[in-house]
Length: 166
Length: 166
DNA sequence: TAAAACTTTCAGTAATTACTGAAAGAAAAA
DNA sequence: TTTTTCTTTCAGTAATTACTGAAAGTTTTA
Image (cartoon, rainbow over all chains, first blue to last red; front, side):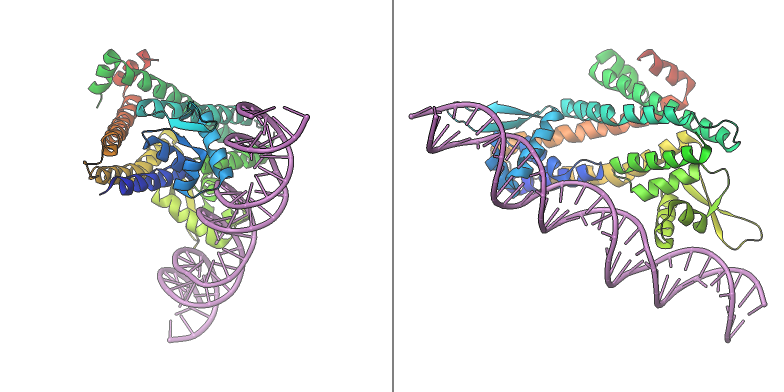
């Protein structure tokens, strides 16, 4: 398989995988293109390679920068902006996790907590409040555990404890 | 807040949350309705409560059964099928995790592995192969770690070790 | 200050995704 | 076996999501 074919397939794969996880397909494809490019790319490079419009390229690049997955990179003697992706995949995983937590876990917990103000007189409220509480505890526990595991994977001592569990 | 309001809001919340995670919004809403219902519901109950069609109700209920989040439940003297949701939220989390792994991790690993057959002569392939390998290792590690996490949360001894890390 | 080079925005529209409703299918009752 | 009751399927369509492209905005150069 030639490099360009493999790169093309990787871009498709990353795009499809991303959209299954609620990440915009084109954004994932731009990310994949930059991940597989040794050199920084301009907006025009990206437009050409993925056959997307200038608007789409611009919006998705800026969103990738919000996620901290892509940086601007200036080229001396060139007024264009160039872009590079963070290549350390462990960093990539951490930053995606961090961003999704920030956007989803916190609002979810807030909304769930509000729902506990349900009228306690209604007998149906009993199991409802219990269930909301169960979800809160579960989400909070998974959140903390994922932090612990992230730390553990980075840390030789904790990492060796974690490996005991596998 | 009245129970029916709280239930309605929970259904919206679960639907929106689900669709952010690549889970069909209506499916998540049907799930939320069943989670917050003490009694088993018929297709007609669900159609009425969520204002969706018979086809939609049927398709989403069957999909929820594939995910093992909802069961059929017969009522004596009634020919209709009734449905109940698994109410143990820890079971719910485990089953969603299991299903997503099965559908996504395995195919992803397979595709990534295929991409390693890239022409090694091209110098660009070097960093490409490294990156694919990095993703494989990362995904495999996260997969194993999530298994460990599940076991740890279920197990008092391992659980206490995990709590040390937090 | 004006022109050139590049980036950003957003109304209109295309692409995708999932729902509707009616017809066909299946199972139970008569 | 015919009718009744309920479930499933799927072509057509509605709803959602995200892209296009041109105009406006911004920065740099001269």
